[in-house]
Amino acid sequence: MANGNEREMSLSRVFWITLRRDLMLAYRRRNDLVSPLMFFLMVATLFPLGVSPDPQFLSEVAAGVVWVAALLATLLSMDSLFRSDFDDGSLEQMLLSPQPLSLLVFAKICAHWMISGLPLTLMAPLLGLMLFLPQEGMSTLVLSLLLGTPTLSLIGAIGAGLTVGLRKGGVLISLLVLPLYIPVLIFGTGAVQAASTGLPVGGYLAILGAILALGMVLAPLAVAAGLRISVSD
Amino acid sequence: MFFDSFSDFLAMGGHGFYVWLAYAIAVAIIIYNVVSPLLRKKQFIEQHKRRLKREQRLAERQAAVESGEQS
Amino acid sequence: MAKSWKMPTWFYRLGSPRWSFEIMGKLLPWFAIGAVVLMVWGAIWGLAFAPADYQQGNSFRIIYIHVPAAILAQSCYLLMAVAGAISLIWKMKVADMVAKSCAPIGATLALLALATGAIWGKPTWGTWWVWDARLTSMLILLFLYIGVYTLHSAIENEITAGKAGAVLSLVGVVNIPIIKYSVEWWNTLHQTSTFTMTERPAMPPEMYLPLLLMVIGFYCFFAVVLMLRTRAEILEREKRSGWVRELVEAS
Image (cartoon, rainbow over all chains, first blue to last red; front, side, top):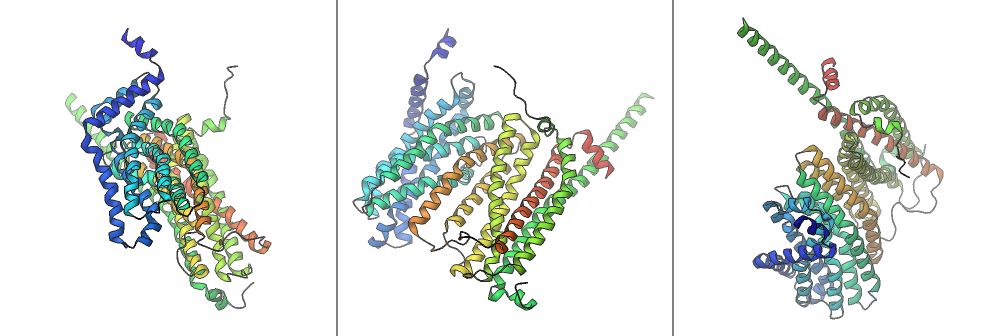
């Protein structure tokens, strides 16, 4: 009665199993994990080279540069979220499984954040140092990224779900998703800039948290709908 | 009438270039939006007419071949 | 308890492409007349008869196309999302075609609002572009339209493309208020402009009546071009059906 047991499987167990599977898969392909991080580092290096190495100027733009670089790095890793599952057919298995698709999708997004957003967040202080971000802003930079990058993964997953069946998915995702990233960017950089000038940051972080909560509730549903549409084709 | 003369109206108190440029772009976009679906419809009707005629001719020829085989 | 909830009959009739094609054909001339009369009347009134603004002089007359275009670009996105939702829920072909037709029209309207805003900015602020809250939101709206349009054209299967576009536009509709709020907040933080072009205390009636005419006229114009596009779309998708064949052969 394997089938019966599967149906009785609790939702939290399904979540953990999917999460573990995706993390395991990512661990087997460790080299792929490094490239978004290297991209993150390189984009941030281009700014002093392209604009000016003046510490005064760099400390002003540091928050924005780190955030834009994090946003682009997340976007870069987004295409792979469903790609390999789509290619080997396991995505179709997920669509057919009795468990709610949005839950499976949510687990996959969580795993994706742990292997892309979380390392970016941990690496951000290094970039902050390179760009002379004021010391007061450093903790807020990490906190804002910690609240903001999951939202980036959630919104990006909508674009990835809608374009999974398409050959030129990668570029298309950026077109679909970048405009939707703007509020996160605004409040994320706003928080860091406020912290750098010694202003309270509670409000910004609260809004970032609210956007994250909204995204956690709605995005998996949209991703699931998008996957059903693009896979059934 | 707000303006004293027609040339005053065209000059728009020195802002004529901006005002008329804005209205010209508006007219261009309005015309584009009206004309492009009309052209598309016309093109479709012409193409479809040809396609239908071709299919008809094909059917007639097929019918002729079949009747030839039977006799 | 389980009382079945029904929409009015005309709603179901809209599901028939043929019926929609014909009813749109009947409505078209009326909206066309309304659009021409209102827009010509409004433009002449606004250009030649309305008084000049005491601060901006005559360049303020650009308001009579900038504001209607901006309002319509936003309504068009909303309509696109609603039509998309209808096509997802009731599997209504015509709603899908309406949603598809909205994207290019809305994009051109957003472009018009941006272009007129930039032209207006030159005499008002001295530069072609200012990161003003309204202009920035309009630019983001244009990006959203471009996203929906590109997704539509990237997917070959029309039905899949329609559904994917509908999901994306619904996501966009949830995001638009957040984007608008965040951009406005960002703008007040950075104080790029000292006064906004279109927000002013109490316009006199000679100024806002032509604006009202233009807004209604633009809505009529939008109805006209939306119906034109949807009708062309209906013909192309229903080309295998008998009534399209008859219509084509009769023409």
